[in-house]
Length: 262
Image (cartoon, rainbow, N blue to C red; front, side):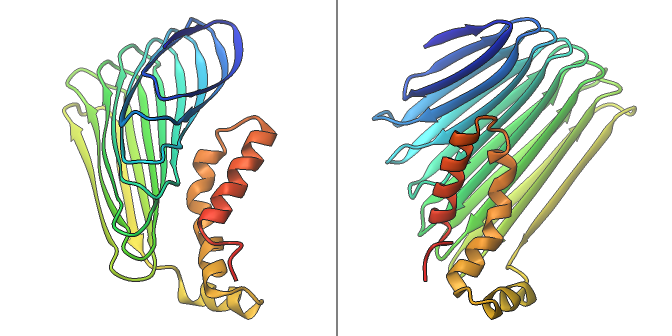
């Protein structure tokens, strides 16, 4: 499926087809993509033309193991905000390659994944500054319950000659229960001196005092853990401008993390 967006746009797509999406110069708007159907691999290609400004929310709604491949390219002064939400009880392999190809290009990529019962969530993410004065940032969040498995390698690259560029990333993984496994590898490849680059990584259990406080207010252990989990999914869900769609997805997320269980 191919689509070109011009001027101001609002759109919603439900599909398992490969997507090729272009945001023309100065186009600005929001796009919701729900991946659902029979295919076990789907490709999404994004092209942000000069001075475009696109916010894209993608939800994995496949009811089987899937591989999702996303490629993004941002040109002069283009801004692309892109996020993937994965709450499914199935393995998911994510491959992302983002290229900042002209000055002023700006890509922020978000992931939020729920990891349950030996269903591996695996990611290979790359964001590349190929010219001077670009900005790239990746935000990866995951919550692992009993038996959850999470593997994420995220690399930011600033090539020689891409001076004045920035490459940042953060990864936060909340682990709960037992027999879970979480591996996160933040990587920076920097081949230029006049740049800004950073990475931050946290993996760990919820704070015992926070859990005790929530349980003392009448929440079950599962509800308390669910409430602490919500903050890991909010950054991706905040990309949704449509209030009714955002509320529906928030409700589904709260159900999946056990907020309504007693």
